[in-house]
Length: 318
Picture 1 (cartoon, rainbow, N blue to C red):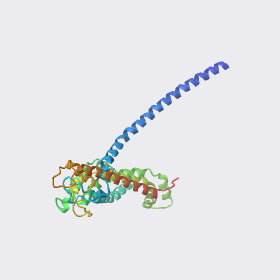
Picture 2 (cartoon, rainbow, N blue to C red):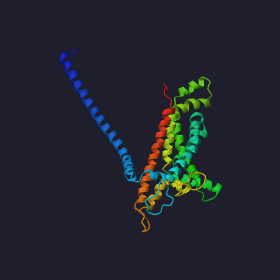
Picture 3 (cartoon, one colour):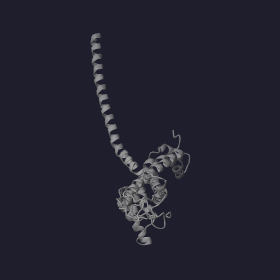
Picture 4 (spheres, one colour):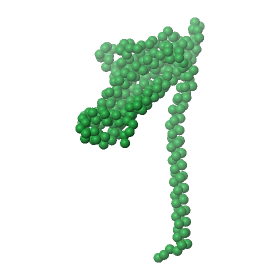
């Protein structure tokens, strides 16, 4: 049975109409989904922008060179003086020492799970890492305090105790992030190196870690950002002090989260007649400026991590 030209033209017209309707439905669905994605993005970014703007707006007034280079030693009540230098020193030293403890342990654990781990031991390690991920920060602080109290006696307050508490929180994050990055390394690279007679440990160092260095550094920075703002474990293990202390192994130290907490806790400090240049809200102002300082330190650490990634990541893998 043959189809005449008018019938063919009519069939083509119906097909074009149907295709146009399908295209319209697709474009409509595409616009709806694109709108939902943009709305979800704005909904996620809005709290971040709001928090950042609030901290900058309230903290920029007192954020200056004097604030960054002076401690709270000799500052009482609502005196318009004092700074955050001692808290910056404590935060940087305690966090870096915690990273010095956590990164080797976490990275070696991840290498074991990906490259060597088989059987019940690997499953047990994975289970305990998952359990450690959900440990509350206050429990990590109590653990570190109890550990050092057994060794050095009750009432011990030192920066190294705070570093141990933070390392308990950092290790599972480093393990999980490093493990995922190591699993993304193609097996072909391992097999090619092993086929050339390279020892397994050298393959891990020269090939696997070299390939995954960008993701590993990012995971370490996520772990640092996770613990640098912790307050509860540092209140227990490090304590509070208004003077500058550079020694992690001797005496109390102040950290930025604890500094912000202490200043905000004071609230509106009443001024006495003998206090010159007294401002009732100065404690709130210091708290906001301390929070801004903490955010800037985290941003600086992330910038350093990006530079490390750019310099050490492999340029061509294909």
